[in-house]
Every structure is written in C-alpha cells, then in structure tokens.
Image (cartoon, rainbow, N blue to C red; front, side, top):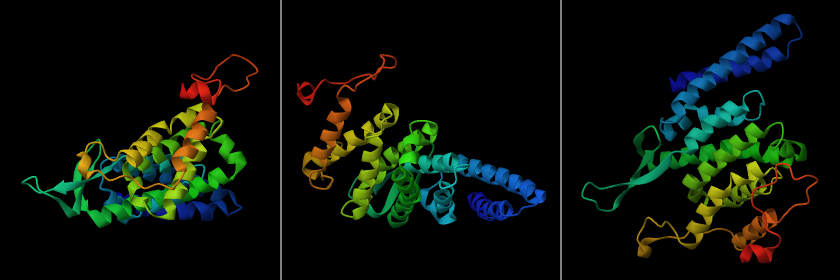
Length: 273
C-alpha cells in the first residue's frame, strides 16, 4: 500500500506539472484530475504514517516525495502532516530479555499507534531523511521575509504545522545531529520560529527548548545519574537562547489593549526576579 501511494505521487505529480504546461483546455482538466489523485495519495500516506516503520516509509520514497511536495503550496500542508506523524515516532534501544545491555543493532520504534523493531542504521537513516525533507523547504520559507511573515498571518495553519513537526522531530531525534553542522542549522530554524512576531507560533517551540536545556545540562533524567550523557550543543547557545526569550517576554508597545499577549515582563531584571 505504501509503495502504491508513492508510485501514485510520483506518476501523477509529474503528470500534473506536465499538464499545467499545456495551453489547451484539455490540459487544465487533466491537471485538475491529477491534483485530486495526488491529494488522495497523500491522504493514504498519512493514514499509514502514524504507525508504519520509519525505515519502510523512507525506503518507499514517501519521505523524499513529501519534501518535494512541501515546496508546492497546494500540497505542503498534507505533505508536512505526513512528516509530522513520522517525527512523532521515538527510537528506543532494545534490551536483552534478561534485562541486560541493549542490542546495539536494533531499536524499538514507538508511536501512539504501534511499536515495531528496526535496524538501528535503517532507523537513523530514515530519521535523517525526514529532517532533510522538511529542512530544505523550511529554510527557503524562512529566508523570504514575505513568506516568513505569512506563517503568522494568512499561512498560519501551515506555519504552526511546520513548527510542530520540527518540535516533535527535535525532541525525538535531534541527538542524531550532534557533532554535525546540521545541528546548528536545525537550531537556527527553531530560533527563527521562536523570534516570530506571532506569539502563537513562537510559543509552539517552548517544549523543544525545555527539552534542549534539560538534555544539555542534566542529560536524560530517566537514566541513572552515573549513566547520563549530556547533549553537546554549540558554545554560547543557551545564553543566546535566554537573551531571545527575555526580549520576547518584555512588554511590547501596543496601540490597543485588545488581544494583549498573555505574560510579559517590564525588563530583564523583572524576569530574573
């Protein structure tokens, strides 16, 4: 079924682009038909994305296809939703039956709908593929001042969906980027959402920042203290993060009192107190 969904996406999205290049009326009718088939294929992929193994979704081509479709405004919300469901899957080491050390080659993929085992290398590759699928379109969107602003206005639904996807992926998989330049890229994208003028978008990032600070200062608190390993993040990042948070929490200049933001502080001193 998943392979069929990918084949439909690949075939009919290519046919859609070709039909849109035709000037005759028949081309428009064909384009509309192809558009509906692409939407149906994305709905099918979404139905499986919550529980299907990440490696299977990646190997089928669905993940990469969603990365391409996220650049098309007609399909980007549905494509991003598929990636959001996959990002919510957690990868946990599989322990021996006697409770001994974890099997270094196998992980358990845990989601709200199912739990399956997978090769750790396949699972990591699939997780990185999800990151690559949303990071390219996300960077392009954030690089355009007009598109960036629209994520809190007319395109706020997509902005929130994209931010939620990144938060989920970050909390469950960001450790895969440790020690690479991709970690800095991911943190810059998350910081851009935190700095967004729309408070509803900015607040969606809070869960990730709490996770990041805890992992970088305390490690995984579910592990014994002597076995904890701290997440290595760029030097000075936590300080820069606090500066941004404090600046966001200071009271803005408002023309009216309507829809006043929930919690602000008069100054950095008030925040620390």
